[in-house]
Length: 517
Image (cartoon, rainbow, N blue to C red; front, side):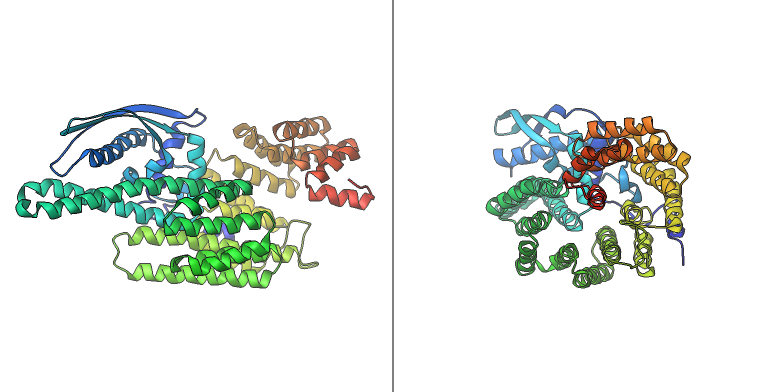
């Protein structure tokens, strides 16, 4: 069997040959510059010289676009890559269109004399919110696709406006037609600003869903359904409702919403909807049907890629890269489904409650992902979550070694490598890596609990208890911290707290001991 690590390369990744697109660039600009900073606020002024085709409304629209560009270009000096963005070669040529939706603006003052429009604008960006938005966007191929389409519309409108302004003196009797075309382009840009605000709202909704705040996600989705006239946002809102129902355990409602969306949403969303259907069937343990839907979704993504390759679209390379993101995610959905099915099947090659032997079918799916995204963190997470036995542990450690050469300050990779050293009973290396992870992020209770387990197994009880107490201090709802504190102290009370907080391990221990919680 070919090793997963053989597919990881430190060479430059050719998947995206030109650009990852606006939102990635913009988020990359904001976050590294203002890491750990408060909300960033700047005030800028801009003067726009009106042409014969302009009025106050058009001047205001165009001036606001330009003043935002100045803000973003200033920040662009500090562009870096974060998380999986280093998979791609990024340029910042597209940052001028899409980013307005993630910058809050307030007009402080404006003046218009019929020839010149002057505006003073306050702009605000929250770097932490931006960080979360970029990851959410990279995880959602449908959002990426729409961002590209909208950016193209805005860029074309700006080019048309500049062309008409240059040609105004040559138009003569055709000035009326030029004015009509100019107004249409300005309206396109005005609508683009509205689209960006709705995009930021649906992005916030999906982030709420991903954080488990399903009621907030439902409120945002229902607001969009009421307020938006955009087909994409109505479709995405319906899918967000379905996903939130699934998260709350209302699987029948979720499946009904997805099935209805197959008729309501544009044809190009079928693959994504089948993916959501598949994930929901997996949750209700109908694995065969779930995997069938996931494979159908994957086939549709590959078909879409063939169409992109055969087309002559100017954005073909970018579009191919975006569909590759979707393809890799769908492969990983299948891997996760296959392993969940094995884990939930008694006697089917299970190492423990959570870890399973990787079947060749699952490895084949992982290898397909690594051909597309050799530095895929999600692949590593899945292998870490399910992979059981020394062979898998060593695979994960080798993978982490390579990724740490790329991201030497990634706390999650140190945590994963340390946990797998722990599984191999190399507790010294486990403690070194877990300590390194905590030196980068002191607020992750999972890191403290894992280090406490390593301390326990080398007989350093006091250090283990200190880490468990720190985990509880960081997150009083982290059940496993109470479980292991109870184990060390022989205290059922802590174990009961853990069980009430949802710790499956605590419930299992108490059930075996005949203790209710």
